[in-house]
Image (cartoon, rainbow, N blue to C red; front, side, top):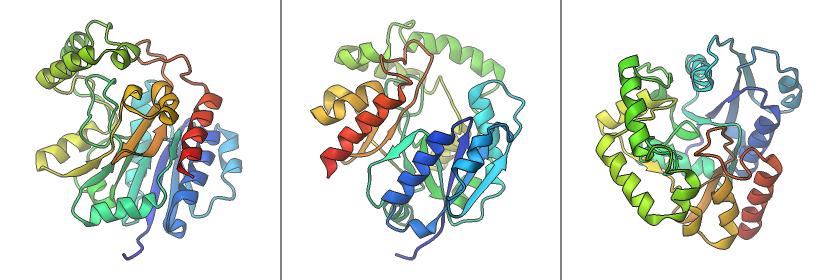
Amino acid sequence: MVKKVINVVSVSWYSSGHIKRMVNNLLDKAENPETLTFTIIDNTNGTDMELKEVLSDVPSLTILYNKSEAKQRSVAHASALDVAMSKLETYFTLVVDPDVHIFKEGWDSFCQSKIESGQSAVGAPYPKWKLGKVHDFPSVVFIFSSTEWFTREGKSWHPFPPFWRRAWNFFVRKFVRLFRFATRQRLENSRLMRTVTSGLETMTGITSPDTGWRLVKAAKERGDASIVFEAPYSSELPEHMVELARNFELFCYSGDPFMSHMYSSGISYYRTEKSGDLNAWISAVEQVERSLN
């Protein structure tokens, strides 16, 4: 396989600690770390004084500064990715969240081989408990493709559809979520509830579009094929993976752990008892890593 350069793109909002861990992890797990370059978009527009210092020893690093006027987190995130897309020059691009840990050795060669075999994208979907979102195509958490795939249609990463559609989605989403009764924890514990809400999702479609949904919509309309990681419930996993899947996000490929996303949320129906607990996430990640060695 010809070694082609991969640009890793990630957005930082006072996330220097996460970014440093993510960069080191990607380099450590890559088969060809010398082919990785990093583009970090600083969404504090330089206010985060630690970012440049923490990443001072990272090879092939570019920091872009973005001053987003948006207060909504997803909109601000999308504006940063829009800035990055115009700067990409490498053959491959990985868009990834800062609070991600990769378990897969040789993740870079794995993803490259899938694209070169005809897949359009490789990555992590939104977990099934995030009702109303895309579960059958990679999401902004981890999405790998050719740079040309990301940029060819000039689609914005902006997360929301027009106002009339947002209003419609708001009411339909309540129905799909059983009027806030279908929380993450209840879905974990009830196979019946998972069946019911899955059926409602099939009927209503995507009612909670998020960052990058326009790219996904265009890809689906073209019939693009993709490799989508599994996002199992903790009850479907062996004991050493349960903690990570129950309180955070765990993604697998062919049953093996591929990556984790810490993901902390203030939304009541997504929260777990350890949401936002960095030490708990790292401990759960290390437990899975030990099982792989």
